[in-house]
Amino acid sequence: MKNIFIKLPAIIVIFIFLLNSCKKQDDVLVHVIKDEYTVEDQGKIGETLKKLILQSPDRFPILNQSEYHEFYTYINTLIYMLTNTNNVENRLTFDWEAIIIHDDKVTTAFITPGGKFFIYTGLLKFLSSETELFSILAHEINYADNGNITKRLSAEYGKDVIGDLLLGHDSPETRNVAFNIRNLVFEESEVLVADRYALALICPFQYDALGLKTFLDSANTGIMDIEWLTTHPSSITRIERIEEYARNCGTHEDTFMERYAEYLSLLP
Image (cartoon, rainbow, N blue to C red):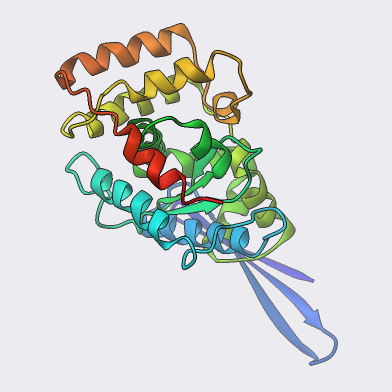
């Protein structure tokens, strides 16, 4: 086995030559390590994670998009509304979309680099209104839009593994990222930034700006464990900040609770 290390600005490309005994020729396996990821890089990383998740139906039972077309259209319309605002830097460069995982026992959601938003039916069924869903979507969009999710994954799993995702590699290491991305824990400071970003997205719309607060109030009652809160820490400070940010949004009171209930009834 022969390793060749080539250093380029902000990137190390490692060529590992492995002897193929059958063909009696060298195969080349390329690894990429980068300190910074372009918008295009982030999109490719997200596509690889999506592919690995979709290829693991035992872990991620995805709702069929054709069978549940109406609900997919509904949630993707909400994402389209949020991402097609001037506050979203990558509104035109990321392929934003929602993917629904059918597991009523799991109450969380996560987003990949490049804007692939995964949400479990357990969380969808816990939410009580469209404005709460709108708020969760807006909050998660922040992590992809500002590149934070890519940086956090790189810090958690290593630049070499994220480089393999960039190249589309399917390996135990890249699958480990896909299988555990929902467990990535954000710092409270990151969560507060995402909340403020979410309120900035929501304010121009005719939604009750306190949807995130009402969701947190319900989640904090302890009626059931909400996994999303274990990865997105909540505190009194967080709720106070949301109320502070919402003061600039006017007095919109529409929660669209009935409309949300109608769409929710379409789920299995």
